[in-house]
Each structure stands twice: as C-alpha cells, then as structure tokens.
Image (cartoon, rainbow, N blue to C red; front, side, top):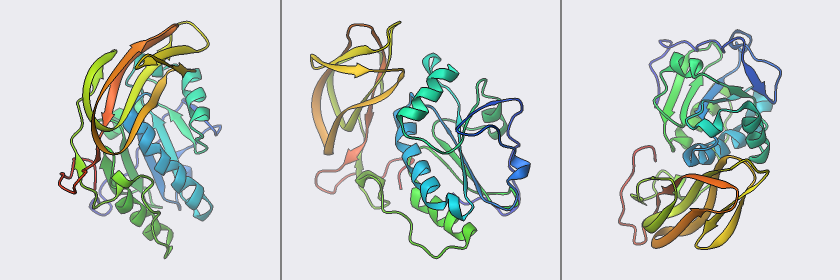
Length: 262
C-alpha cells in the first residue's frame, strides 16, 4: 500500500543491537538509497515464505542501491535466542542484513501489527510503501524499481499463490501443539524445536522428519488446495509448538482473494 508522500519518517535503527551478516547499520547513513525493512520470525511460516522475496530483491537490486533489512522480532520463546536466529539465517540462505530486535523495541517504533510487516522508505527516509501479511510483492517491487530509476519488469511470482490474480481457498486455521486430523490447505508447516538434543525428530504420519533447530518446516505441499488428513506428533528429542496451514489455489478457479494476498 502506498503511503502519503513525505509524511512518515524511518525510525532509526536501535543502538545497541545485535546484527547478522553485517557489523552494524545506522538509518541516517542510508540517506540516498531506498531501504526496505521487514519484521519477521523464522518460526512463522508466513515469514519464511515472505523472506524469499526479500532475498530475491537483495540479490537483484543491492548493486543498484537497495538496502534490505530483516528485523527479526520473535513471537516464540524458541526464536528469541540470538544463536538460534543466526543458525536460522544460515539455514534459510539469507545474506541480507538482519537486525535482532530482541525485546521488540524497534517493532514498537513501527507499531507493526504482526508477521510479516514490510516498510519501504525512499532515499530521504520517507515511507513510500507498506504491507502487512503475505502478498503485495509486485506492488512493492514496482515501488522499488521506481525509487531506483530502473525500467525492469518485476520478478515473476516465486509461487503460483503469490500471483495477484490467483484465486485462493481459505485454509484450516493454525493448530497449537501436535495435531491429528483433517485439513484443507496448499501447504502444511510444522513449528518445532529440538528438546535438549542436537537434532530432534517430528513424526508426520508416522514418518520421521529431522528438526536441526527451532523453526518452521514445510512437511507437505500440494499443487492446489487439498482436503487431507495428517498426524503430526513429537518424536524423540523434539517439541512441536504448532501446525500451520497455508492457502492453496482453487481447484476450479472458484476461490476468493484472501487478506494479505494480491
């Protein structure tokens, strides 16, 4: 969503603070370049799906001046440990700077309502575009191209459900802890962590799934929204915090545009 011109300035990065992939950044030293800040949590599947776009934009536009910053604001106790954040950043292949917003102070400056929350600022540190939840990728990238003065086409959607014209089906609500029952979704994710071991095991329909650290793990994917049954339980050395279901494409084109998509 486009913001009114020159009305909302970029909050300065907190100091002191821990960073990943960079020693430290200051917002006042970013003047002259657009800055994209997204609040995310590696234990939230929506965040994991969204940071794939941040990485793609970093890879494509960093050399043209775009600064991408992932502000890691934890929503789970298991995602607050800085070492776990660093391990997740490496596991997810993230190379852009990540700010560890340990106590949510930076989030408070933005009043970010949830994960993910994305904010794009221009070279004078004024808010240009913002979006809460998944989606809005093409609109954001068009704003990035405009700020950089580039005449390129935005990237193709990384997933079919990210297309602005995609018709999606409302998925089963997120379930706390282990889950055994029916679902409707395009993807099934498990949020889990090892329980005092180097690697734990989650059982998905009785089959072992390795959990090398706390995080959100994709355990089932469908080409379109599918009705199914799944049994997720903690195996040896693991704790299951929840099971999350992502929307999928409507099988017959008769779906609905969900909040945060398109």
